[in-house]
Image (cartoon, one colour):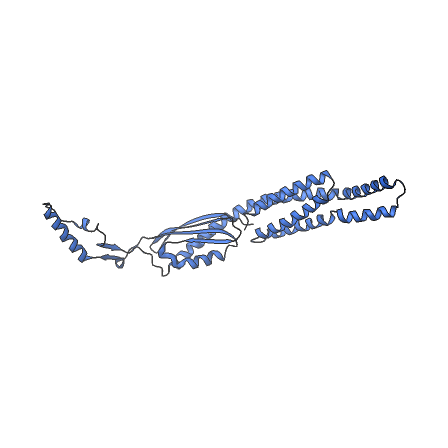
Length: 288
């Protein structure tokens, strides 16, 4: 089993780009992928979605990229000489008007917007080739976290399944007692109504009719088959939804046993089984 909740983050420092990739996932009935990218890297979103969509079956997953350019080339720097010259002249004029004996320094000039411009945008060309190895590493850590949580979840589910199976065995042991109780009640009813003048064959026919209606052997056998199928399915990938459907079928069989039952011990066992199934279904909400 694999949990639907997981978390991982990985730092990036490749080809003049620094940043971080974060993967987070939550419970969800269906697959829901949310990708957050800087505007300059928006072109790789389809690649990220394909990457994640091919590796996860259901759950809400959030993938966030925080990226910045840290290496600048000469082509990324633009100096606006004409604007700087005009600005310098205007600042000198201002100094003269204010009777200030000072000239604008280079430090002051470069503080004005539009004098020096640096292109810090990330070049989209080849960006996916740079980021995909980092995303692979993030995914590996993310999967490890989901597997670890899935192991703990599976252990809890199997404990509840053992509890369910133990109570089913108790019910099976009482099945014959239930049938005998049906027989004794029908015989007692015939004696009450007809005294000693009743047809034994008629009693047996009535017992047979009631046993068909009240016997729980079929439900017990179906529940045994469901238990075997549950253990088999739990070893398969992406089994959460299938197991939840199977629990619904098991719950129907338990309800049927409860409706046919006339023994207090079976009633108590039915309550325990329904509680175990509810706990299992609660855990399955976090299984992919």
